Length: 251
Image (cartoon, rainbow, N blue to C red; front, top):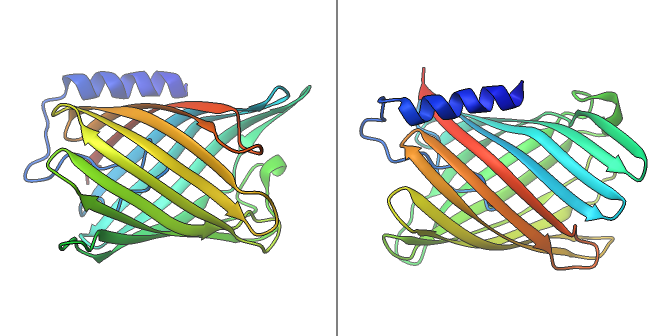
């Protein structure tokens, strides 16, 4: 059913003649791991939908189908956010599936870009431990936050990075997050990026990764993306790939 809905949305996006007026093209927090600092326009719903496959090792893999980030713009400085993920985990001969804990949160604009000062926003979520399938319920409410920053290098290129921390819902020790990415507009509709990102735990080894991807803008309200990457550390997943489709509309 999810695949059918995705195809329907793709068909609509290609054939629609309704374009945003006086608005920049859709700005999404996918496909890279670096969240963007831009706020969803006021009174717009934005849905960022994706499928991903991650190979951890010969005996472990994770499929997320779908992951949905729902964003709603309150004003030019603030948006509300909802994260839902349906996960299929395979460990040797065991398979588990269900809904990850739902996350709720917000993004708020803090600083506008000026000279060497990047445009900066704060994103914060909290995971609801029992609002999940039985196999994926957590023990505690768990927060995540990150500061997301972006510099304009030229009309076609940007440099973005995130710094933050997250908790897993099972213990009280944070994992620190960093990302660094550069994006480039190949054409008016096609964009590309390369990225380095990672997770630094207080109790374990650091997990560093690399990825890259492409976006295709059907029109200002609809975007398709494809991405993939691999681990750089001994504890990192071997590789992953993902496909996504994002769209927005005004209520």
